[in-house]
Length: 169
Image (cartoon, rainbow, N blue to C red; front, top):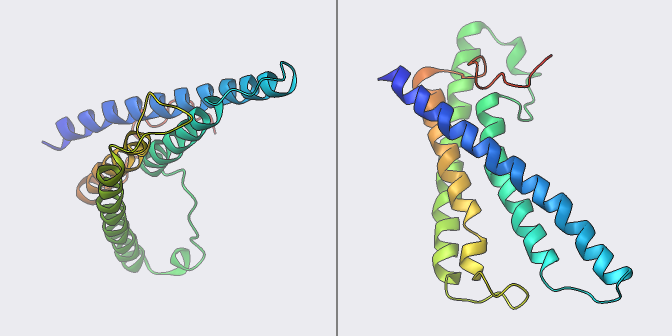
């Protein structure tokens, strides 16, 4: 069970990494297009800014889940590194449980936000509604919840081969 679940999480991890990477790439392409059209062509387009914001939100929330699973998130370990091994494990478990609680709340409220704004149009980008533009929040939260559960059940996944892709240090 644990190996099949971890393999499924590996696939989700790779998908999330690709989504975050493509979002970052699109954002870096769209912003100069907006600047070029505004200052060179003297004709400001309405779509680059909402697309860039959507990409930034997607990169942030999906990328946060990727960073959590890879263990590359910011952590202050000054106190916990000085604790005995048993207390270090207990502290890590407490942190993961608090992470699960906070991420669950984040999912709950972002899901409600999407529902509340689902039919509200975005004037600058009429292809999407406001609720659709906020979808990366509950999706990223759900992915992060799965990664937290995996960590709680099976320990850190920082040393899995798929997580180490591109890590040369």
